[in-house]
Structure formats: C-alpha cells, structure tokens
Length: 163
Length: 300
Image 1 (tube, each protein chain N blue to C red):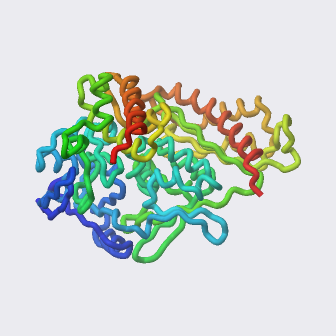
Image 2 (image 1 turned 90 degrees about the vertical axis):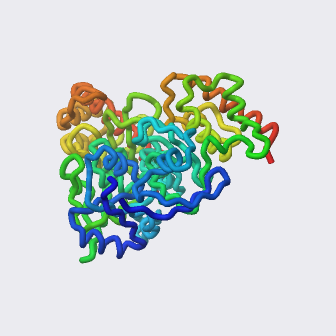
C-alpha cells in the first residue's frame, strides 16, 4: 500500500498526515482524525450526507481523494459552531428551534451545503434552497422543515451579520 | 483499490506518455464522480489510475476564430452551466449541464468524463450531438478529430484508443434561424438519471418565420438519451420533418417515429414501453421548443 504525506487544515487546525494514496477525504476525516460528524451513507455520491466545505465550497468527501485536498481548508460539522464561544451557528440553532433533524444522519451534510448557499446568497428563495439541497437526501422525509430552517437562518443572518 | 498504482501527471504530455506506456492497463480519472464509484465497487479495477486533476491546460471555455465553442475536457458541469459564453450562444448546453446530478457533483464532474464514461443516459451528449460537436483525441502520435456521433460503441465503450486522451470538444456556432432544446424526464425534481431525454436542433426557413404559421424546417437533428445502448440519433424522425412545415400533427407523428426507432430496456427506473411513450412526447415537445428558440433566439 502506497502512502503519501498530506497537510490538511480542518476546522482551523493544521494536520500533517500520512495517508493511503487512494483514501477518500471522508475516510481520512473519520478514521484518521476521528471527526465522525461527517457521515458516510451511500459512499457513491448519491446521498450528500458526506458533504463538507473545501475552501468554502461544498464537495462530496466520499468522492474526493484526500490527496486532492493537500494544503486546502476543510470545514466539517465539528467546526460550524463558533470555535471560541461554542455558540451554535444560526443554521444549527434554526434546526434546533424547528426540529430540522429527525434521525440526524443527513443533518451535517445539509447544514454545510446550506452554509455554502447562505455565504454565496444571503437572501435565497425557497426554490434556491431546494435546488442547493437537491443532492442531499433525507430518508426521514423532513424536507419541508429543513427548507424552513434554512430560510429562518438566512433571516437571522441578514439581521445579525456575523463578524 | 489499495494495490492500484496511482499516478498524477503534471502536464498533458506526461499524461499521454503514461497512457502510451500503460496501454489498456490504465484508467483515467478526472472529476472522479463516476470512476471513484466504479473503483469502490470493484467493477473497474485497473492496474494504474492516471488522475488528470492537475491538467489545468484542459480546463478552458473559449470561442475559436471561426466562432466555434471550444471546451476543454476537464471543464466541470458547473462551469458549463454558469459560463456566460455558453449561456449566450449555446444555451442548450448550459441548461443540459444544469439538469445533471446534484450541484455538489456538478462541481466535480467534468464534461470529458461524462462523454468518456459513455453512459447511454449521459445528459450532456444528446445536445452536443445535435449541435454537431466533434471530439479532439490526443496521443503521443498526434491528434485526431472525430464526430461525436461516431464515438460511442456500446455502454461504457468508446472509440477512444488505449493510448489516447479526450482533450477538447468543439461545437460549431448555431446558424442563423437555428434553435435547440434538450428535454429530460426524470422521476423527481431533484438529482436523478434520465428515464429518457431528447435533444433537438432545427434550422427554419426565413420566409416562414411568421407568427401563427407553421415554420418550414430546413434542417433538423434529433438525439435520444437512455433509450438504447448508446446515445442515438433519431434519423427516421429527422427525415420525416426535414423540408416540411412543422404542424402540430406532424410533430406528433415524428414523435411516434422516434419512439419506433429507439431501443429502450426495462429496468428499475422505468419500463421499455414507458420510455418509448416518453420519447414520443418529448420529441414532439423538443422540436417545438427548438423552433421557438429559433424564432426568438435572434441569431444573426
């Protein structure tokens, strides 16, 4: 098995790793770094549960080779709350307030894809939200509330822009 | 996939040299949205993976001197979907790219990968076919250009030689009074594979471009997705429409002809019977929309 060195900044922390050349980012996050908030369900790019942000943009970590992310900045669900105060991100708070999650397996992916959407478009329509989340499956069928939560969080963020 | 050799060339020349040496033992991987899945399932075990991600020279969208669109093979579906150049003059390609997979997959998936994966359901292929696209295939021996129509040999099988890499796709400009459309039927609004898809490109006669009158179709190309072993041209339906006035009755008849010349299968997504009915309906609608595009597109 061939390995290679990889530098990865995850949620603000720099990691110097030695990874198998064919390891996916999802495997490295979960197995090497213990960040199991990133969920692996279908493992073939259908469900979106493994979505993470790479340099601020959403990618499927199950289809991304870890070595592809050398020197890039990864945000996983563990890094979404404020690192200093621990305060939940408005998206997380909206999911808590309105029960945006049921079983919770799709939630990390939903939240990160939604964050990337709100970073790019602070005032999305319901249709914009549905389109952005169209690659994220919720097997509980909680879509209606998830979309409402994202719209709620967008409103909160517009009223109280974070520094 | 642990024992597979993994190679990341830094230039096209280096990549061509690698595939030249490895011959059929190499698998090319670009965005990885198809190739990674096949590798994980063990259905596509190769001795060596050649990852094309560093070949920035294949990532371009530009207009050539003759007005043709030139797309590098490593351009992502998302880039096509959002490209101002594509949206301006080849809008059907942007719309087709935007209907594929999910936004997150489109960020990775490349157009070269979608073509070379040779899925019968590849959404990007039928619109390229009706626009008359050509592929540039490169090897250490040089380059050759082939019409997209001749590239597909069967599901997952193409005319790409073992020592070759698809480097770019050239799409001629739409002629005056031309229009195009791609219609895809899927099971849900979100990310899904086509049950069936129809692309149409028409050129109508200038003198018949009167509102309310059925325009005369001078030239037409139709291509069908997900209803045969490869993306198909519907040549009999084209023949029935070429040189005729596109009355609603005639469009319906052409749809039935297209349904008769495709060769769909039953699978988990839909029955062959249903796919034929979709082709009949989508063909009539796609030709209608392409004519609408020709009438409103204001191409010089």
